Length: 312
Image (cartoon, rainbow, N blue to C red; front, top):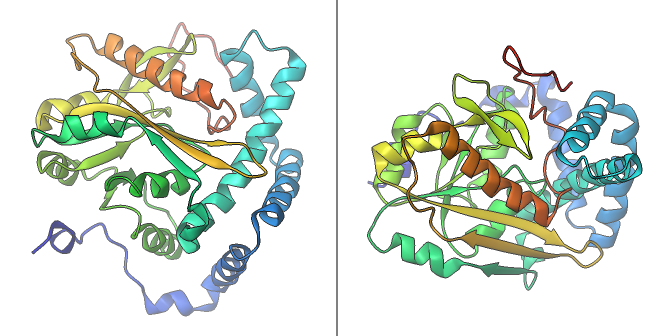
């Protein structure tokens, strides 16, 4: 019996209650989104730009967070550059919605659009049977990034379940062809098991989850609560750590690049802050390749212990 059939506790299942009127709005929205995937890219792109303009005007809190994040992370940018790049973040986010829909419902769209560097580094790290933790970032490509990676290797993904049970089931089902396993972020036992069995886990330690799960370490020179769970995973599973980054090149006729960096050597060390700083530097390197294709509307610096200046 395979792991996927044995491990069923976190898997959401269809419920007949999903057909009740309270869920009809979601079904109508899903049908509309699926219809959008049959549109040519130039139409999807136009719609994405329209939605980005609408989101920029209406999502004030997200807009202000994006602007503030870019101001503190790129102090060399002028106010005009910050505004321009922040608006591009919204455009890339909306393009990412269509890229994800295409990955879920029309994956053939990506044919001849994807290239990869560093696959040999991944294969070399797998030779001795150890599991692999692929450190990545929350790209605006969303699950499109997972899909293009799945063209070359079979990744598992760590995810946070949706609060709405129908959305949770729909997203989980759409992701099934992409990932080997979708692992609830609270299911550490299964996560460690998969690593010990030699599987590849895509893990993104680039958000602020407070200091119960991390330490303060510089991110673009700004102290930030930085996740350290991957250190503990390595210690208990003997997994190897590499990084993966995927991003779009161009917009009118987009191409997609995957870059896998060589294994992190001497990781982890005895210094938790030094390790977190090293991981943040790795993530910074990723983001600088395509600065607006990251979720800057997340409050990356919301945790401010005593003595640290507030960002927001």
